[in-house]
Image (cartoon, rainbow, N blue to C red):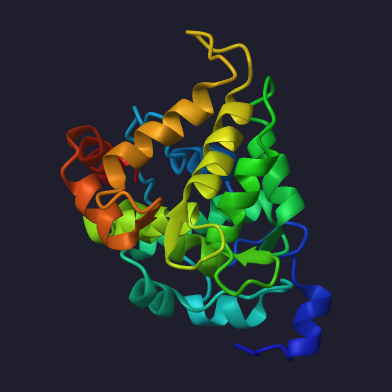
Length: 259
């Protein structure tokens, strides 16, 4: 097989227009297209995960090897090889292929910026304003803090949430709530998070939520988590309190079957 040069591949590959599949070399099948929006929804701490989608096996043999596909594909961002991604995550090769196919549907260039991320999220909450919560979640996925989330960022974060230990998952959640990353959660930070969640859910909820609900939720959170009553919740307090809470632990277990 004649390997094209890097410049040639940028001019001839169909990756940017979605005609080729980067991980398999096959044209994307309509029946196989997963919607990344659905997977982002699973990450919402405020949402109940009540389904167990199965991973579809790819039945068509790849024309080229995975490594050759990566070398020849034209994208603004080229993800690492499958072997590398398998080392970084707890996903199988097939699961990574399915996830990438979904990611590429919404992000043909291989990266998603914050505005696109917010747009994806807004489709789930047409009666509310999800922009603030989507901003916080985007910050949690943006490991390099460069204003963009690539496929590696996405699957590394998703692996922690879905396949990590209880401590891994809770640590990720703590980082989401610790907005200024100083190692503790303040009432102001938690209020911003809770307000963003209530804004996202909108006014048309059942039962109807009053304006004081976010503040009441924050007070309840601190009564449970702030063991020494110093006005902040540390990582240690957060982990200890969550692991003793049956409802939280049950929600952790539900994530085991998302993929």
